[in-house]
Image (cartoon, rainbow, N blue to C red; front, side, top):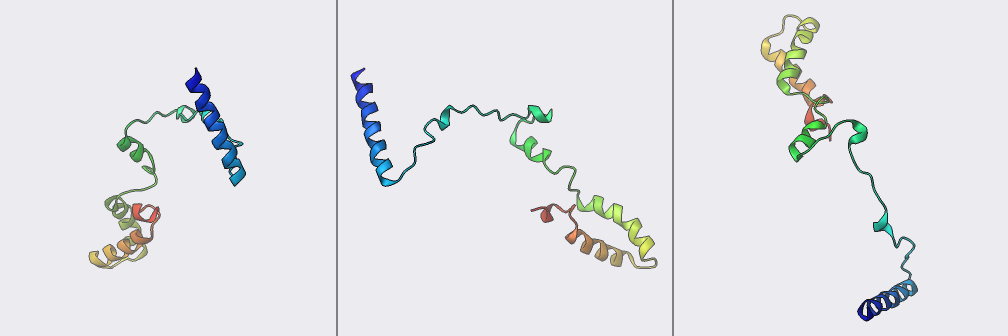
Length: 106
């Protein structure tokens, strides 16, 4: 009991010295605050780092091959008569600028 009282007095003395130096002690009980940080509001529970990372932007990004397959018919309609390599170059340029490209989402 004496040891706890001495420890408490030591902390109070240190606190007073720090207040004189300009430190603020208005948030003494920050650790007593209960934080409800759960994913229950989202109705989705994700565990494991890989699952968490895969849950972000899964719908917002696609692979280049998927993008290529989507864009090729559009390019053929827009620019008829080009060679396949010319279509590939145009699609690659679009891919570099596309928001569906993972490297552009940062």
